[in-house]
Image 1 (cartoon, rainbow, N blue to C red):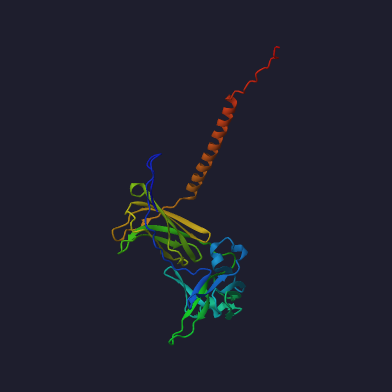
Image 2 (cartoon, rainbow, N blue to C red; image 1 turned 135 degrees about the horizontal axis):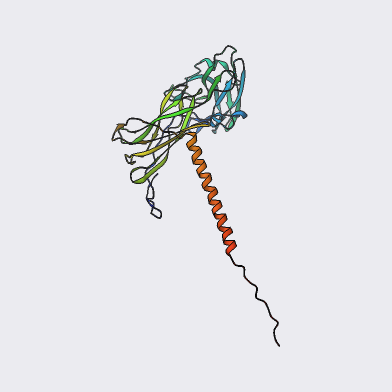
Length: 350
């Protein structure tokens, strides 16, 4: 939605509603479903969340843990059949990697170091219609394992009956992010480096943000973009950033926010806020959308801790001044209000 800001008190606010932008994303949700023979589907989700990570949204979606060499970790996943017919489900682990901003699980049971440490309580399930079974996941880290983060995926897979010699395989997965090393998990952090306006060959504008992972763990980014101070005082947003972008340790990548085609070229004040679990960053820049191609990136500005403290202090002071002024006004009214005098009644004469 694009809105014109009021130019003065009492002015009418012009609101221009634009067509909604379309967004696409790659992500492996905690409860995915793979279509098999029409409406038949299976799903996989994390059945329990570690109490120490209960407040982290990512820990509710994935196996996201820190473990010391020589230790064993156990988690439980639930495999469900949300269809009207029974299915034979294969459950297995394969290696995974982060490439070009995507978490990619290997095809089949392709191993890597982490997948070789993982064992499952069940590798084959017979699930009746509308049922669910839990599978225990054990991760045993060798005592000589080197420090660092590793990735794998747990797959639940269903194969359809052969039709004309073709077998259709459908699967859903749950990610594993495992950090190996002594002590607590490495700090997670990232920073929005720059913002740039772009426009593709179809005339669709977008904002591209260069984001750098400055911490010690891979990140799954999502967030929103708001535009303000546009032509004629317009503002627009929020617009969702491309969801599911995964940023490798020490890596940097582009996060795109696709916008409505009717959006004016600007200039605009762009404010992008991104999150990964419990951490976030906000970057601001004044940008323009070109007729085509991409404008040079503009360094993102960030509000410092002290700027945020000043805003909070001013808000708090304004609130208490408001309360105090109303209190003294009330007391002043009470003091100047004259009480009604009772008329003295004299006895009636007969």
